[in-house]
Image (tube, rainbow, N blue to C red):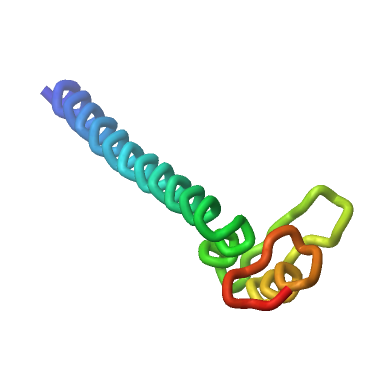
Length: 91
C-alpha cells in the first residue's frame, strides 16, 4: 500500500511540476514576443531599456565594454551613432 501511495504521490508531483514549467515557458514566450513587437515598433534600444532591470547587464560583441545598469544603457544608447535612437531623446 505504501508503495502505491508513494507512486501516486510521485506521479502527482511530476504532473504538477510539469504544469508549472509549462506556465513558466508560456510566460517566457509571451515576454519574448512583447520584446520583439516593441523592438519592431520603437527600435531595439527602446525595447532593451523597457525590459532591462536597473542592475541589468548587456554584453555585446566584445568590441565594447559591457553595459552595466539601466542608467549606463540610457547613456550608451543615447550617444550619437548608437544604432537607433531612443524615442523622445535627441541623438
